[in-house]
Image 1 (cartoon, rainbow, N blue to C red):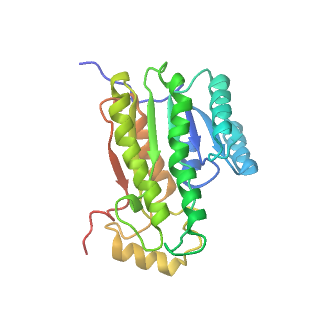
Image 2: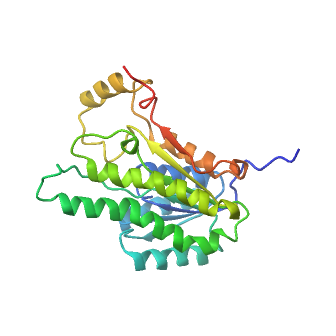
Amino acid sequence: MSAPGRSIEGSVAFITGAASGMGRATAEVFAAEGAHVALCDIAAESVREVADDLVHRGLSAEAWTLDVSDAAAIDAVVAAAAERFGGLDIVVNNAGVGGFAAIDADNYEAVWTRALGVMLTSHQRIIRAALPHLRKSAAPRIVNIASTEALGATARDSAYAAAKAGVTGLTRALAVELGKEGITVNCICPGPILTGMTEAIPEADKATFARRRTALRRYGRPEEVAHMTLSLCLPAASFLTGVTIPVDGGLMARNA
């Protein structure tokens, strides 16, 4: 039996939303595993600080400012990252935005447009830009970050839920389309995670929600999502594609 590798050392990973939360945790985990990480975020100063910190620790990283709703910017940054590191092996579509709005709210159209632009349309654009490089990789991997909101929704969150459900559909369709080339495409649906998006929720409310809704009775940490992302990107994960994996502390499994 041949043993597929369990290391991403030397691989090049393109990670969006890398300035904070799950994106930053993914960058740190991947860099610690020996990958070259191309970090992208609209928060220019913050993403540079993340890259500088990794480089200071002797790891391989570089930052780019990227608004993922800008198609031309995506093409330019993907090309620059591939040139800087000599190719691309892994794409992690992690960039996201929040924003609640009732269906009849005056700002609903704006919330809808932004949600789909940042969390769905950008995914296919980044994948399309990265494909020529992924096709040259020995272990090409795409991981899309969705949400448990794609699997069970919250009131006044329909734009976000629709975008994230679209990510799961895009993942399945591209897994089928790209499978013949050996490119795997998988999706992670994080549940309640301690990130900037949940920071404003009072601690007592978070504790109550976790106790009532999750099997583990707590919120997850960004690095716990990052390690699942890493698992999907290992060379050994070569026969896993088209799946949606909740990383949610048992939220989707629990009825009561």
